[in-house]
Length: 282
Image 1: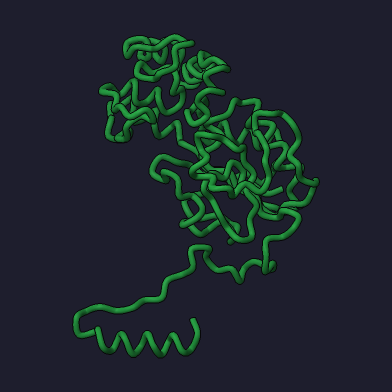
Image 2 (image 1 turned 90 degrees about the vertical axis):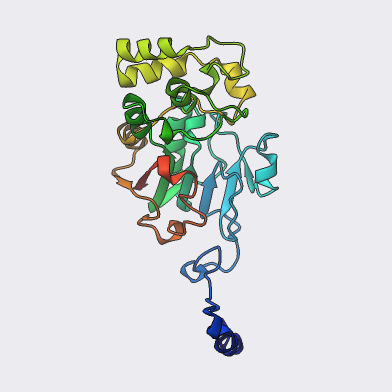
């Protein structure tokens, strides 16, 4: 804030203070830009948001797939067009990135796609570079399901209905197409009793895997916005370790070790009440 604006704010505050009103300077939505050595978006990507959606930052590059469903939120801000399901190497140089971030994307991808994504991020990061991941916490959701706490799933489904049973609400969060209300017709729909029986028969993680394996590939293509996978700290850590990362740790909301990713107006902003956060360095 310039000295002129400071003087103007003080004068206005003096005039309106009698009513208990005060002008308070706010931080720019992009946070402290002084922490970036660059003054413009670098020609070669250094900071990348994978599956970025509506994200925008003047120094970051968005890597995403142009998609009719997400067109309104992508808003033409895709700098690198890339399909995470393609199996092709990222269009980025090895050892070139300082930071990579992915939020609420992996639950829309198969295990193989997530493994490949982690491996490609490891390849593209500079030594010491950071990779941060955020996604729904299946352990949190499963615990709520087991104790019958439907209040953890208060939102209507993506197609506008609010399932009455906790079984359907929970299933919707990791295998959306299998719920009774979902418009998909190419797969078996699981009634509440069947859902309970599967968890009783197989146990937690085997049951979760059983359900996601029932989702047909065609459904994943037709409904890219819906969930087809589940993750917890243990599973995601194993993927990162297999990708070559060694310094892997669970983080918390807004508590990245990398200063570039601590602005919660831009990072960790998607459903933090249901999310967990992993971070690692190359």
